[in-house]
Length: 201
Image (cartoon, rainbow, N blue to C red):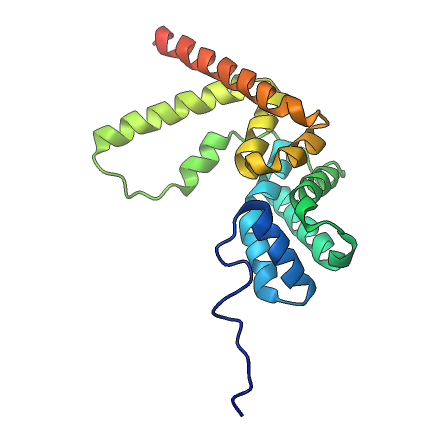
């Protein structure tokens, strides 16, 4: 009666990151492993969420889009032939879902407010916090002054990581080789905006 095998301790994705983690979780999810599904949701929901928000959706509609995207994925796990294309599939599907005429399109919500809402109030000295908060506001003001395409590119490359530049390229409809240089130009523009603002005050 000790034949029962336990995989709880050592899931196949243990120690993996990036596309390797996604691929291992996809394989396990196809076999019905709910922990693998939960791991995928945990790892990649921020990416899906920001794609929805980048399309101008408010929080409530973005939540609907995120839920719809995950339901779509788990209902057709077998159809996604290459698990390593998962991030690209999620980005593309989220953009398509965000384009549907739900109850949308409210004003784009500045990310600075969102970040501020979720920050734990466990910061050290009030003076340090005031400086940090001021820096954050300056960074987000500069970010929001970038062209929309730059904003979307920076969001996606931060969330998807360098390993997923192909996914970002497909989502942005850009050649993969131009992602890095374009990202660099967007960051340079943002630095110039920050420098200009710093000099103005």
